[in-house]
Image (cartoon, rainbow, N blue to C red; front, side, top):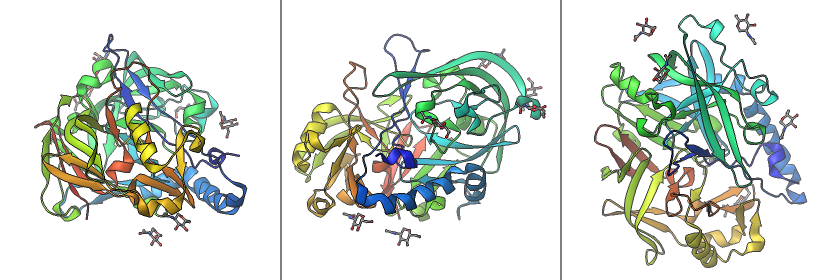
Length: 407
Ligand SMILES: *[C@@H]1O[C@H](CO)[C@@H](O)[C@H](O)[C@H]1NC(C)=O
Ligand SMILES: *[C@@H]1O[C@H](CO)[C@@H](O)[C@H](O)[C@H]1NC(C)=O
Ligand SMILES: *[C@@H]1O[C@H](CO)[C@@H](O)[C@H](O)[C@H]1NC(C)=O
Ligand SMILES: *[C@@H]1O[C@H](CO)[C@@H](O)[C@H](O)[C@H]1NC(C)=O
Ligand SMILES: *[C@@H]1O[C@H](CO)[C@@H](O)[C@H](O)[C@H]1NC(C)=O
Ligand SMILES: *[C@@H]1O[C@H](CO)[C@@H](O)[C@H](O)[C@H]1NC(C)=O
């Protein structure tokens, strides 16, 4: 029996894997993990299943909950929907057609399923129909993204099109995006979002397409080339999933001052952390390279680091369930904080943040990628588990992030 049947366990890894050789043949990793369930959890899971079906009827949900709001500061704001703390998505419209899109800081393209995709998995999602849009401009260049899962590489294919993109009440003219005509069912079957909205830099954009956020700024629709993100971690409030602020920051959403950190590599939102440690003494790494990835559910660590963390938590191979590690909920209160030294300041993540609790089944928030000899082997991927307690501003002009505890 698996959580997956109820649409609960969609643990995502939306991370563009940069291939060493070909800049154009980039790979994205989306990783789905299925958690085992025990029979005594049946009732709770049935409830969750109902909840997920409500969420799954995305036509209703995405339109009603992912509304455009305006923060006190007047910054255009996209409200996010939180699906079981594993997917954060919001509503955009392309050529007047609505889509739920996952906001992914570790890739830079926008794509949605095309009406030309007749696969069942596409039909389960909103599909873009260019014939229904007056603002459609044909492009037609072939588009391909490769996804890596634990089992096999999966590929999305389609072609580029251009249309008006509306987000948080702002209309971007002539945004080029991909219409997907073929996508792997195993990965997207249960996703609640239709497509992915990349918030990375143009240097990692497939087809060298100018990413939406850059067009937003270049077309004068936002004052500053930056965005801010907060993700909420209460899965019981899916419609209060967080906010994506476009073109500004809102000091009422964080406490104290922002700490600024320059990017160590521009493409992803990649930074160098002086250290990451458990108990603020046992150092897991020094001068750690990490990317901030809202498209990944958990925290991805190098495999040797995962072994260290699991040893410290008393997690053994027997606790592994389809790629994630379960841990007794009783242990959570005795687990140490994880401390990230960012820009000479310590940011702590308590166990209550990095252990996920699915109705009494506790799951460690740390996983590692299979060792594929890829260039991300030593990279930390700071996904939604990390983002939870923080407010982060992503600055495209000064190529830096700014971070503070969320209020
Ligand atoms: C796309 O839209 C056109 C114009 O409204 C319509 O005739 C066509 O049936 C639509 N295609 C599909 C597959 O729904
Ligand atoms: C969008 O593209 C169309 C067709 O190429 C062009 O006529 C129009 O001027 C463009 N609009 C903007 C705002 O760039
Ligand atoms: C995907 O969903 C459809 C309809 O819900 C179902 O028929 C199909 O078996 C599913 N495929 C997988 C791989 O789960
Ligand atoms: C298609 O879009 C790409 C990326 O924006 C652009 O470089 C290319 O010129 C476009 N091709 C056509 C035929 O419009
Ligand atoms: C999560 O949301 C539910 C429903 O609104 C609320 O009852 C509960 O107190 C919240 N939990 C936390 C920890 O804030
Ligand atoms: C996990 O969730 C269960 C059921 O919702 C709750 O009773 C328990 O206190 C939680 N444990 C932790 C460590 O959060």
